[in-house]
Length: 137
Image (cartoon, rainbow, N blue to C red; front, side):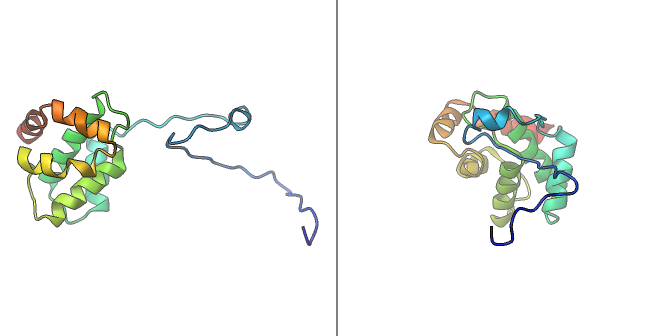
């Protein structure tokens, strides 16, 4: 305000991102173009984990990614994103794990599921079966 109105020679391009934790106002929505970004496929997500956490074994990265991708297919309030894949893998590495097993997965699932309802839903799921499939695959 002290220097007056500044006019851009080229109108700025603004990128807004949302993880949908709060609703975006309708007036803003009307002025936006939308581009939805899906979760990465398995190979891409494993590659992201390996780049972001260089000390992780390929085996653990693949196992955690497989379980997280399976959890995304469940009826959860907040399906885990790549950030949760990274958080969980990092927690497992900090615990000295180089392979995922059902007991360890169950004990550390709080790194992936951020809502109590999702954790309760996971209690009903056979997390051990998800892990066994991930370990076998």
